[in-house]
Image (cartoon, rainbow, N blue to C red; front, side):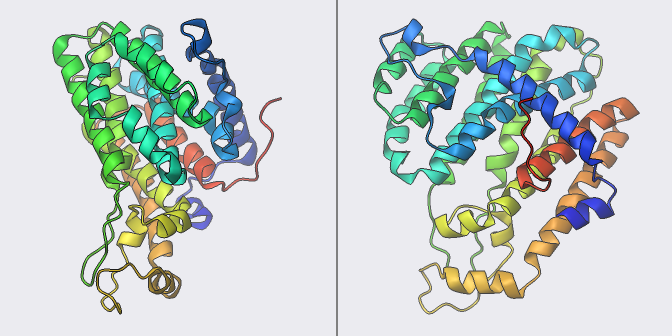
Length: 351
């Protein structure tokens, strides 16, 4: 990944990267205050965002918040005549992205939590939240009072997101469009938890919708919340999908080993087709792993990632974006790809 990103001149100077990510950490830490303490509004036990036992998840919380916020800021730069009016929706986007990150992480890495999560956040609950049914908030807090910390935190984030989403005062049509995108994101996440047997001639699921749909939702949130100050009438959905595809492939390269073990959708694994298996309806992980080692799928995916960033910027130019606007896209894509991939040595960004 490092070689391919460097070949395409996307590799930043080390200090520029650390400066950018320090700013992201600072933004994310400030945004943690958006999530209310349930103990102040219900009888729930007090708990913190940092109570979860998943060390990586605990470390990523500020960055997940900042990434959603930064996406919103970027779309505002591209779409609107003023960015200052977009602070409310930027906060909504930060909560949405953290919710997606938590939901995805729990589903993928905490299999034992799935039954409880499926029970608490089923389709009926989602519809109640989309309808702004106030009763569901206290019900969720009560139901998760003694749940694992990760699920309690996810519940807090979900409640905070929907409250601020409804406070945006969107038109009925806009709410319906965004609600449908949220439903599609939820359905894609749930579908990714089903391990489908892979037989001869059948490729592994690539999981594109799971990664790309949330980026469309972030775009729609900004587009429809800032309709009164839009300066660009073009539909930038294709650009939102292109950004989502950059991070779809990044995520798949980073999670290759875990996705192989858990039979999770992954575009790199989907590129490997095993024609012979001793038992057609059983997944042969050893054979698949050997095929990956012997083949060139990983190197090819790294090349595709760099090309996707290049194509993203070319698409931006086709929309006649300014150099400043293109820079906001480039920074978001390259800095967070490097961050997600752990391609730069870690530094303590708290100082």
